[in-house]
Image 1 (cartoon, rainbow, N blue to C red):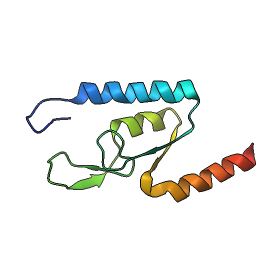
Image 2: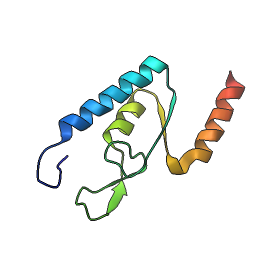
Image 3: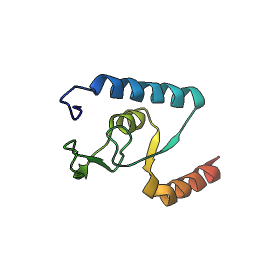
Length: 93
């Protein structure tokens, strides 16, 4: 990932994603709701990195890492879907 000055900011994003995963695993987190559009947290779309407000389908690094480890990730626009999934989880228990 490149910032507005052309600097590579991938390492801090990856470190943040790894810290979020460690915390999620420590707490037994099975679900997460993250802000869409973010290059870290986007789960449905992310901005294209040009800083012109353009977006495309994709996931940010934290959302992708959490999903890779089995955490179900929802966008804030997906609260209804999360609520439905939580209801399903309650009936499975």
